[in-house]
Length: 266
Image: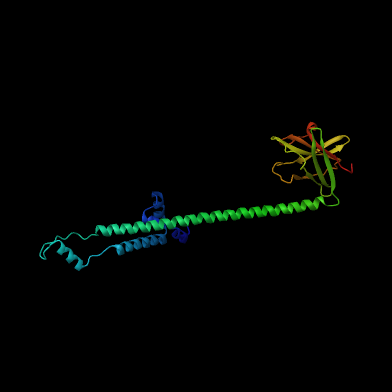
């Protein structure tokens, strides 16, 4: 427990003023029993309130008392019954008023402190979110630059994939780096797949026709650039993209062949 933060929170003043809930009062009482610094601070707050109440109470001097007797036509020898000494109602009300005012002030300070803490938390979270966005933007720029460097490499084979019967307007491109055994698929020309389906990329040997899956174009809807990197250690003669059920298929569904392109070296 940080004692200084505990004291600065304003809870002790509210505890003395009696405006906290039963559970909060019990918690502060237990904390004070365990930490002498808190108990000492509570006693100091109580002493301050008592001093404020005392200073606000009016006092009657002897001259004022004599004047009151004259107003009541009391003789000097009139027996006056002495009542036990106690604070006048005015003094009591004044003390309570002072305590209420002090409590209201402490409550306002407590609320202000909580409001400030809340604003600090909001600002801190906004700072974290901004830093995260900056990191993501920086990573995106790095990935984009790496991609541009890759597809501009002179050793890259570019394979155009044209639309097929099921979707003649579709098109795509494959950027094949044989040295690094990677292929980048630019799928910007493909329509978004319907729910429950995914595009699957195939490396093809043509004679006889032998397809090998290179992977899925995952999160197609969420990828703004629609460029996907896949590993390709095959001696590919062509590339095809089919629409398959979610999770992909072991072999291509030829009736759902969207694009196909033959590599220049085949």
